[in-house]
View 1 (spheres, rainbow, N blue to C red):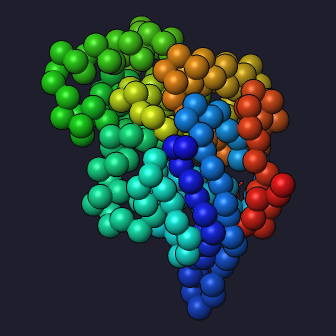
View 2: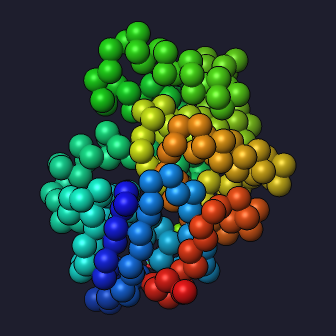
Length: 222
Ligand SMILES: Nc1ncnc2c1ncn2[C@@H]1O[C@H](COP(=O)(O)OP(=O)(O)OP(=O)(O)O)[C@@H](O)[C@H]1O
Ligand SMILES: [Mg+2]
């Protein structure tokens, strides 16, 4: 088992109010899963993804990555695990606007201190796989929405992470482009034996996912 979440509760504090976002979640993510989290707006999908990606910590419950408990590790230790093992694709791309496509994709490799020749090899590979070989020197604002989302996917996968967390990766894309992005993620998941956990409203995305988990009001519907 790659990830095991047990008894997860998470609330946000907003002004004087406590907003319960997750109210008792048990979830197992197997190695090689291509999993969709679906549910209405506000149901807790992004909150759950942030916990799976070790971006945040639960109020209650445990998160095991392989056999180690990681849910309560300090920020520094979680950051190291994220850099080594987890890639992120966010809605709205999150690309650095002043960096070229090449440099945006290189960034996670710089954080992992990979030597230059190995970095260039990885960047060539993922730009090829995402159909971006000709766009290495472009800036993000010189690309279409679909191309930008492919850069975001290339950046998430260039490290060959074991786990990719994707939050609404096809939001803001037209149907044709969304379908291309879904197919690309699916191919990359198969090729690189990468595990994907994807929050989506997109039925087409969910159809491609071997597992679909429905979240509502902070719990998983079974
Ligand atoms: N930073 C925050 N501060 C306060 N409340 C928050 C915060 N983030 C999320 N929430 C609340 O937690 C609940 C779950 O939010 P979450 O973002 O996980 O939902 P979601 O399923 O991802 O929704 P969407 O489909 O709109 O992205 C909602 O009630 C939301 O208002
Ligand atoms: Mg969300």
